[in-house]
Amino acid sequence: MQDLTFRVQRYLPGKDSKPYMQEFTVPMRQGLTVLDGLIYIKENLDNTLSFRSSCRMGICGSCGMLINNFPMLACHTPVEELNTDTITVKSLPNFPIIRDLVADLDPLFEKHRSIDPYIVMAETGDLNKLTAQFLQSGEELQSYLQFAYCVKCGLCMAACPTVSTDEFFLGPQPLCQGYRYCTDRRDTGAKQRFEKADSGHGVWLCHLAGACSEACPKGVDPALAIQLLKRAMVFDSLRLRKKPEPATPAQPIAESKPKIEVPEFTVKQ
Ligand code: SF4
Ligand code: SF4
Ligand code: FES
Image 1 (cartoon, rainbow, N blue to C red):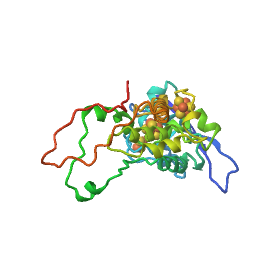
Image 2: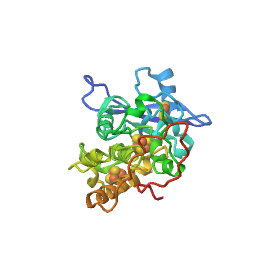
Image 3: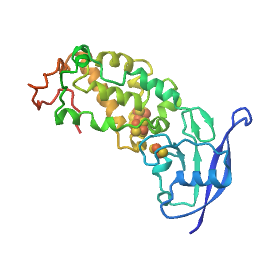
Image 4: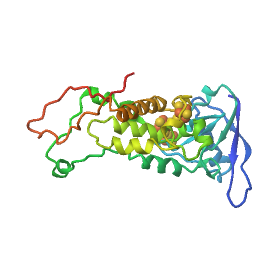
């Protein structure tokens, strides 16, 4: 099989004034992924090459990088699918570079944390006593399921043109996760998230280009979530619709029955 040319971004802070590209020759084999190619380089050609990876199966979200100008997971990208024998690999745009292909994802995690990405409960007594279940119907699960598949890889943030022009824009991943928890019937934190999403760097800066959804390797549609979040915020401010009362306190285990009820706050596909 034909050899591949890997053009790889190199950058060592304190030594290099700016990133530069270095070429390596990697033998092609069937099923080779971009991550496999980088591992080959590190093990056989240059052990100083730095990149991040862990699961090698598209789950941990750590191997995001810019591959032939598109944000992708290196472990999830077979070279055959790129239809070229020259592979250019850079660190994710819209993030500072730590070294070589390692992007600093701290800005993503800080923004993610800022939107309260967890179920907020006004009443926690039942949780502390552990005597109850907080049942979800199939319809309730469907209202947020696809958004819950996010692995926090940052590809959507790297693809977003608004993030590239406004470093303070909350961005697709945090806003999507904000909506995921707002639409969860067990949650009572929508108001506090709406306030954060309504800031000058919040939801209204998204102009629905959809690059974030195109980049997502997990089938999440952050652009859809952002539009649904906008709708929920408008409804809330106009008081046209109200989120139903949270499903707390929960039914005692012995008496609880599955409750099939579609919340008003549903995602319509
Ligand atoms: S749809 Fe919004 S969040 Fe997604 S890439 Fe476009 S501007 Fe960014
Ligand atoms: S929404 Fe998709 S692209 Fe964005 S961080 Fe989550 S998994 Fe990655
Ligand atoms: S190594 Fe875990 S997603 Fe690629």
